Length: 74
Image (cartoon, rainbow, N blue to C red; front, side, top):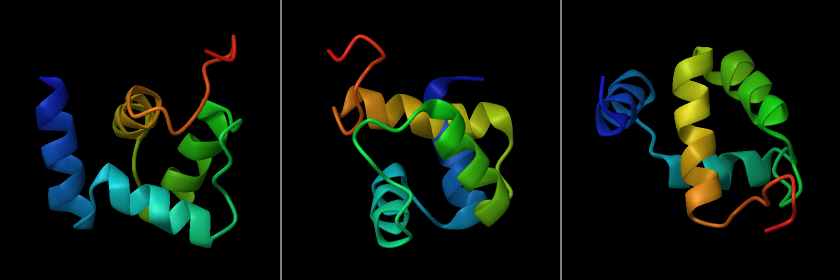
Protein backbone atom coordinates (compact mmCIF):
# COMPACT_ATOMS: atom_id res chain seq x y z
CA UNK A 1 0.00 0.00 0.00
CA UNK A 2 1.36 3.41 -0.92
CA UNK A 3 1.71 6.19 1.61
CA UNK A 4 -1.00 8.18 -0.16
CA UNK A 5 -3.30 5.16 0.02
CA UNK A 6 -2.86 5.16 3.81
CA UNK A 7 -3.86 8.81 3.95
CA UNK A 8 -6.81 8.21 1.60
CA UNK A 9 -8.02 5.32 3.77
CA UNK A 10 -7.74 7.46 6.90
CA UNK A 11 -9.84 10.17 5.26
CA UNK A 12 -12.39 7.59 4.10
CA UNK A 13 -12.66 6.13 7.62
CA UNK A 14 -12.65 9.35 9.63
CA UNK A 15 -13.41 12.16 7.18
CA UNK A 16 -10.22 13.84 8.39
CA UNK A 17 -6.82 14.78 6.99
CA UNK A 18 -3.61 15.10 9.03
CA UNK A 19 -4.20 18.86 9.28
CA UNK A 20 -7.57 18.14 10.89
CA UNK A 21 -5.95 15.78 13.38
CA UNK A 22 -3.41 18.45 14.31
CA UNK A 23 -6.18 20.96 15.00
CA UNK A 24 -8.19 18.39 16.97
CA UNK A 25 -5.15 17.26 18.97
CA UNK A 26 -4.34 20.89 19.76
CA UNK A 27 -7.91 21.56 20.90
CA UNK A 28 -7.84 18.39 23.03
CA UNK A 29 -4.58 19.46 24.67
CA UNK A 30 -2.77 16.43 23.25
CA UNK A 31 -0.54 18.14 20.69
CA UNK A 32 2.88 19.46 21.64
CA UNK A 33 5.82 20.08 19.32
CA UNK A 34 7.90 17.74 21.50
CA UNK A 35 5.31 14.96 21.68
CA UNK A 36 6.35 11.40 20.94
CA UNK A 37 4.90 9.18 18.25
CA UNK A 38 3.39 6.83 20.83
CA UNK A 39 1.35 9.66 22.35
CA UNK A 40 -0.23 10.53 19.02
CA UNK A 41 -0.75 6.87 18.12
CA UNK A 42 -2.52 6.18 21.42
CA UNK A 43 -4.77 9.22 21.00
CA UNK A 44 -5.66 8.40 17.39
CA UNK A 45 -6.48 4.82 18.39
CA UNK A 46 -8.62 5.86 21.37
CA UNK A 47 -10.45 8.72 19.69
CA UNK A 48 -10.72 7.59 16.06
CA UNK A 49 -10.11 3.84 16.07
CA UNK A 50 -7.05 4.09 13.84
CA UNK A 51 -4.59 1.23 13.86
CA UNK A 52 -0.86 1.51 14.35
CA UNK A 53 0.05 1.74 10.65
CA UNK A 54 -2.49 4.43 9.86
CA UNK A 55 -1.58 6.38 12.99
CA UNK A 56 2.09 6.26 12.03
CA UNK A 57 1.19 7.63 8.61
CA UNK A 58 -0.39 10.63 10.34
CA UNK A 59 2.74 10.91 12.51
CA UNK A 60 4.89 10.91 9.36
CA UNK A 61 2.94 13.89 8.03
CA UNK A 62 3.37 15.67 11.37
CA UNK A 63 7.13 15.15 11.09
CA UNK A 64 7.34 16.04 7.39
CA UNK A 65 5.49 19.31 7.98
CA UNK A 66 7.75 20.16 10.92
CA UNK A 67 4.90 20.16 13.43
CA UNK A 68 6.84 17.84 15.73
CA UNK A 69 10.53 17.54 16.40
CA UNK A 70 12.54 14.45 15.69
CA UNK A 71 14.18 12.81 18.72
CA UNK A 72 17.39 14.66 17.88
CA UNK A 73 15.55 18.00 17.86
CA UNK A 74 16.03 18.57 14.12
